Length: 317
Image 1 (spheres, rainbow, N blue to C red):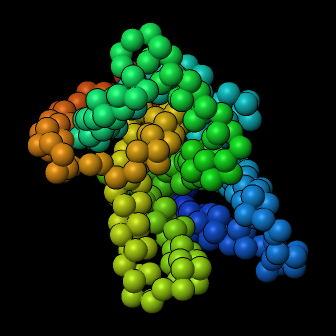
Image 2 (cartoon, rainbow, N blue to C red):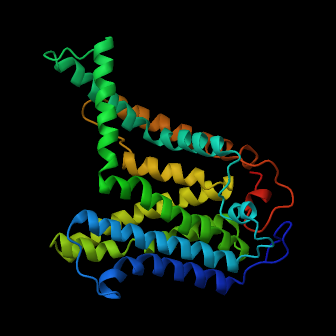
């Protein structure tokens, strides 16, 4: 087992794996507890159904954080020290938000170009409303943006996609599981590949839900969910990389929200070849900036005397 820096204690490997497996199972199983365990009547609306799930996800997240705190070799119960084990801290928040967001957005260069082309086409074709770059035109665009933001406040699906799911998943599958695996002696690259396995397993319930709700064939449901699982593994690896490199929960969290909003990157469009050019340029930029923009020194005051869950201390690549 590797040295753990300033902390000589670790977590036995079987305990780390068992805890991660239990957290994954609990995160999914509790979603069905209101009807299966508590025997509550079916929710009266989609909104009440989602609120139940929000409460269940919040409970599983809090339980995971508490259990993890007792397993990790934490020497102090001081709040700031305890939260730092999960990458929850206020210092270097600006770097933890802006730099990973910029890095992630480079993969969506093609998507941005396509949106710009689409907006330009709308302005050019909408001659009746005279939408242009004048003050009135910009004012109208701003008003539409404000109305869109206000509509999200009462949109329960938006709460799920942009707030509840990213926050609970990052706290459970990154903030809890990665410190456990690192303190179990796993090397950073192993954790980056192993952690997404638990993350993808937590999405297997979508197979059953898709199969039952869409009344589609099992093969089609398996293909759809298989594609989703593949995407979650790729994103989970990237989010884990961000968390291990930066030691800051804000890095994977803002990237998760951004990717949920953008969807899959656009790499081709029949409207213009500039989309493909921008996509390739974005990928090249992403690869080139991946390590410089995630350098541990940018997100931490010091890398001396770190604990086993702060593996960025020894990562100087």
